[in-house]
Image (cartoon, rainbow, N blue to C red; front, side, top):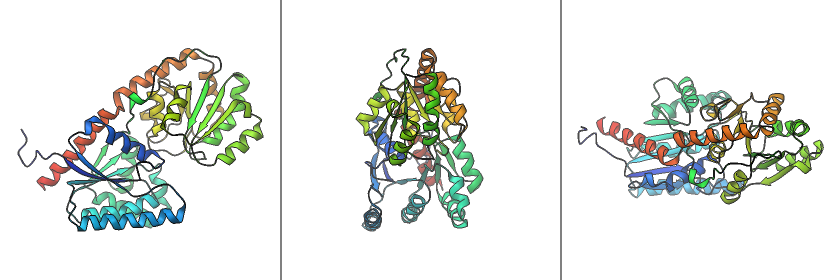
Length: 368
């Protein structure tokens, strides 16, 4: 049995990340955790560091929040542990300051990485590489979104970084998994930032070829980003009648978009572990994506979806055409995906793992 010194449990945690109503995967993850019954018994003080908006007002708000955080610490606020969500570039350096201020209290710090490409950040400048090694070596624990990301952290920041892997969660009860009709007019859904990184333009280029084989197929794009270019490319290809541009969608519209889709497609070039793929799997959709970062740990090729190399438009076309033309295959892969999401990504299961990480960090700190 554990000694009293080892039996430390997390009951008061400060979590630092973007505002909970900000757009993006980090806030989606944090909201899912905070709403989970598996977090009962832990007081979580959420510190929002950034909200959406124009550049200058956004920068002013970030500076003001940093000052409030320091003032709060100066007044004696003392959580047991700080859990810091960070990405790369601006997010990384903003959180670097928070981490140093948190560490001054003597409490342990957990870093949770959401960066879509740590290697690109590391290699962009020597100062980035040095800052990454400094911060990751200093943390009491680093949490990666996938085994792939964990291996990258060890390569970039050193093999002695204290690491855990915690997959992103999905709130399965929010997403229906009713069997889809065996239609010959299937709908392909894309959800995410519109742009090169997510493979938006590759999907657009594939659409005319898919329509040549499956004329009744429809394509829907949801998300923020370069909507103007998306509309221009759709018009240039003459496929407006088969494509819907949804813009940014909130939760209700997001659920409706998944419910009305038959296939999910995210042909990304850079990722961590996309929340949209987990939500699509929770909705019983087969996924067409790319074998990068944590995606192959969610989308099992030929089992829960199909994986094609980033930028390979002919392969993307073939994968989409295959699924559009085969309702039985869509149903089998969608069912397998939902089952896999239940086993690995269910929010309550993930939150229990999170609590184990916090408890282990506190117990290690208590022994040292």
